[in-house]
Length: 582
Image 1 (cartoon, helix red, strand yellow):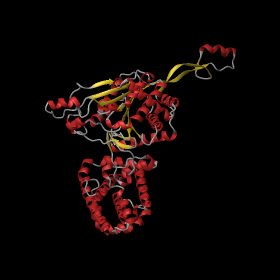
Image 2 (tube, rainbow, N blue to C red):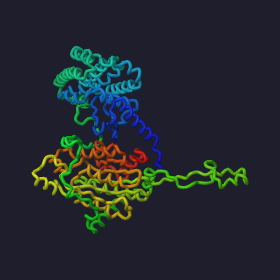
Image 3 (cartoon, rainbow, N blue to C red):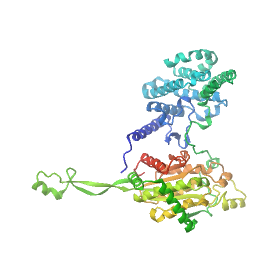
Image 4 (cartoon, rainbow, N blue to C red):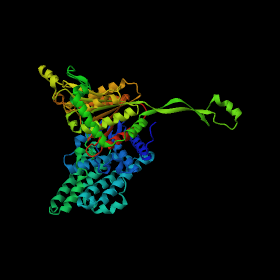
């Protein structure tokens, strides 16, 4: 049986599930969900630009009510803002764009002003109001409003929201912004009235938002031109006031690099049909056959030495995995109990010894392994520098799983050649037909099959350390291959850990199709198995956030963290995903 997660962990899981559910209901986006700490719709990451929603995806930076307010506000934006129209109207000037983004968010939030919404959804209104008030106070106390520029931007946001929502500005801030409000009112008064008048017409509203933003931008330019360039403290404060939202291309700050994903025109034009130019040169091979026996023995010794230095408690890890990847199954009866089912064989004791009440029995259950775990390793060239750490992690996990009686397998994927090889040559001979699909020789590696115990394949796992196995990576086909192997197994719960440090990459395929052809196929494969729930796919990013591809993902840092720390992170992830078969 799975150990009960900590109280904080349970509360966090429940809180996230409730946020997702309320967000889906409010936004009418059924595919809205969290991946790690970020919000997605299907595979599309949701950028957050409005200042009062910064850190909207980081639980650690806000309390529950403030967090609910952020998610509610984002949901309103998804529901009431036409993103295509918005992207067409976005101005180029950074200050104008800053205010354009903020004002569009405020427009969507202004739908709460309707009396019937306030009456029927008072909690929603209270959450969004609480979040904005808290942000306003934090901005005020941060010192960013100490400069004229910071105060100007802050004042604009406050008075626009007040006008759209027909609500007074917070009393604690009203005196602070009064002089600035009086100074800019004649300049932006007409646009303020237009924003209020057209708050239900996005295109007409945008015209006034751009006009207002442009006027404020010109005022800021004039202010900056008058600032003494030798006064570094004032310049630093001005930069700080502006820098909180001017990096539009990156969206909100993400602590670890995120995999860059996009749309493939070739893939979309083929209606999501993935093509392979030729499978003639593809192969599936046991990795140990590609390494000389003497070298394999040497690599195994090196791996053993490194693992020994880590000092990992295999028995403890085995118990943790057994608890997470097992389910209670009936294993006979437990007799001599004081309650439960009556044991007919002991009824005579009730006559001979009236005070004897241990005549009952219970069904006895004990944890039994119900899972199979597969590790699929990206053997592309960039993974070579991390492979020592990955090999230690994999070997340790497989050994612990073996001790727990849980089946596991270790697979890898690469290509036979760089830049296409024979498949690419055949394509050239056929005069380069358009959109040929995958143009390389895939190579799927088996380091440890599921039917073999770790003790019998421990030497083969060391083949991971052979440097010349690493070439290019065709992830989508590899994930499909690994999932098909798992679906042939009888275990009810099937888990696939995909370990990678980047996006799918094959030079020949990218050049003959487009940059995101392999990327989109990987997304399609993962989405397919997520929908049918046959296999739980978990992405383990090596120094990278793989959430654009995998709904469940974890970023591993081998440069700063020990193998034990990364294993603990995987255990924590498993405890959050639950232990029941899918």
